[in-house]
Length: 335
Image 1 (cartoon, one colour):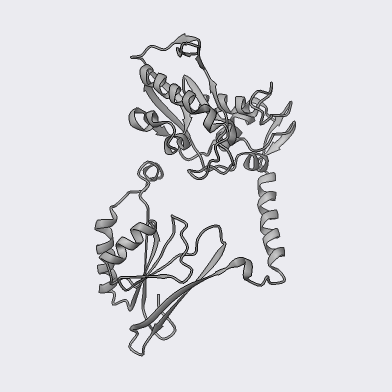
Image 2: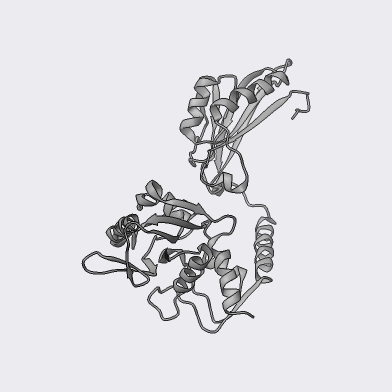
């Protein structure tokens, strides 16, 4: 891009390499160590007067890049949700970051001389709570929310004969329907879900995409995990060991948009007092492979290492879990 006075600004963008999920969307992953030098060479060949890097790599990587590539003028950082109130100068590279959730707005000033050379650069942030609200801001925001709700309300999903409760012990619990939906979708022998995923009841009658989105706003996918019986036993023991802790654990991130992790609920799995594990009433065969319907969220959180260490994991993109449940409910309870 060019400024009004003809200065040429080169803009680069790099993000963290999510090796488990990017390939599922058909994206190739290239190492930053090889791509950054190539990109900087293109900027130099294009005779850019300033180079700005948009980074979703995290603050530690931003600082490393500043040390290794002082020819970068500004790094605008993200991913780790860090805040540099007045920027940070590192090896002559200006690091800028405005925190998370829109709590701050960042400003970067670059001063160039008559030869389009940077002579001064600075950054600062302003708390959005301190900004004056324009007269029509609230109206515009409300209009966007209302329009989004209208679009979701127009998508009728199913007609429920009874309420689906967030109480996992209820006769008509939301989680039991979801367990069956995910198990069928993953073509699995058994399924596991956590009650904290379910934020609202679904009321009797016609439900819409909005109802499901409000009840399950998570960016989480169903995952088919194949384990030998011996490793299923170990995974179930990990779940039982962590059960009381997770019941009230305040969970954040990894696609989760609720508050607590909640109770682990099984479908097709039982455990007796001697710690024997049964799949659909049959005692585990330790050498036999079993398919479990889990969530990619359980792969990313640190509580169930068996999934990552020995699981043959297939994340079922592109549908979120609420879309899987929507498809299931639409067939079971058609309008």
